[in-house]
Image (cartoon, rainbow, N blue to C red; front, side, top):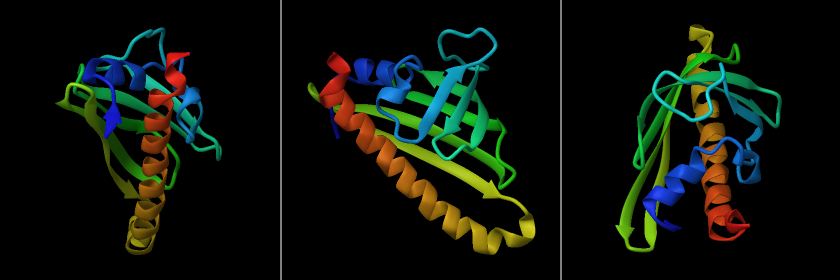
Length: 143
């Protein structure tokens, strides 16, 4: 649970000018092709602190509740990736914020070994991102 209104939290989560303030995964992130705000069909670029690069396209954007992307270019280890933010107001001052993801690794013949490892890695990364977002919105984001 995160303190704040669903409108405010959703807007902060999708503000690419402030992403590096809270996201421990992202070394660089931006919207592409001249886009200034997310919307269905808009592409985003994200480079991890480890150097992995992914370009994703917004496939759903329903402020203030859902934002979802699907990978269009990414690391060779991924055959596909999609993820989505969900926000739900549960009281006047609290929201649940979740991030779900789906992925397939490549090459196919190594999926049996790679996907469990990648699943653990993604789970840890998403937990760190959600914890970073929560800590930032409850303290630093108001600066």
